[in-house]
Length: 76
Image (tube, rainbow, N blue to C red; front, side, top):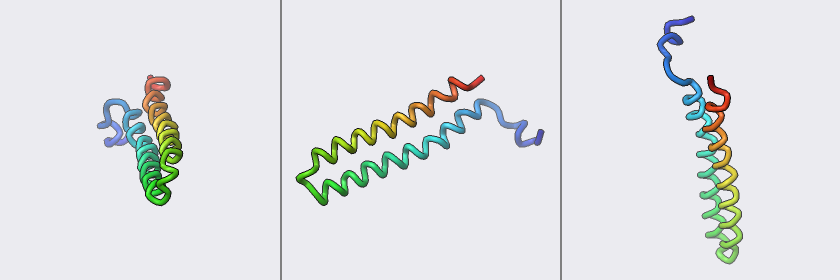
């Protein structure tokens, strides 16, 4: 085992979740950015766009919540 690996302590799963949280973070930014842009282009459809935007947000955040639970489920 290398000296670098011997110096690592704690849960490596938390580092993995930190890296996995980048995906939902980018997804939420894209959802709301494109939703606001769509509402600016078609203000009459703002209600439909907003509801679809929140559904997409909920599904994207569900992935992040699943990711935070997995280290506890599969951890040692």
